[in-house]
Image (cartoon, rainbow, N blue to C red; front, side, top):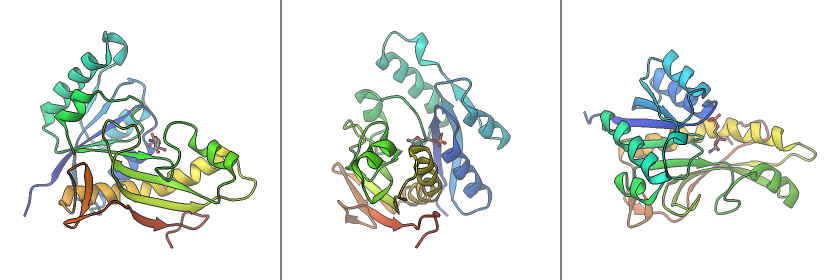
Length: 222
Ligand code: GRF
């Protein structure tokens, strides 16, 4: 049997997506080895979740470094103690430098709360409501130098409800993230999904469009 994919999860905050990974691995539904949870913030609640699950943790605060590159070098040196095959950004609120991305080329995933390529950047839920969009969701993608612009893997879509607030919409989007992020990371861990020539390959086929999962208003998969 192939070795399990050693996976580092990088967080800055609450870590509900991290918890979804922990729960899936714990019940045997996801075949990844969660080797370390890293945070740039010592008070990130995700560190508590990791410790409770018996996963090693590491924390380096970015404030103590002169620049982004110096911080990123320190993070890479720390992560490499676990020799991760895959890095999962789960609410990690730092832009990564080109050298860091080269070091882990094709091995970094992110989830962005929008139907990319629509709405890269911040405040996606309010922007969707302001635009009157009927659909919203979240996208798992490989990380490249283009912010929120790397090749997409899996996208979860759900209908926007009339009159809901940005917070309500955010909560519904997060609930579907907890389903699609572990699923997509599992595909990468199994080698079914790869990053090659700056593109996503799924089961050996170059795939410029992500796999789409549709959900209803309550977050139930259709
Ligand atoms: C998620 O909503 C994700 O889309 C964004 O950051 C948020 C992290 O939330 N990249 P949590 O810390 O996993 O709860």
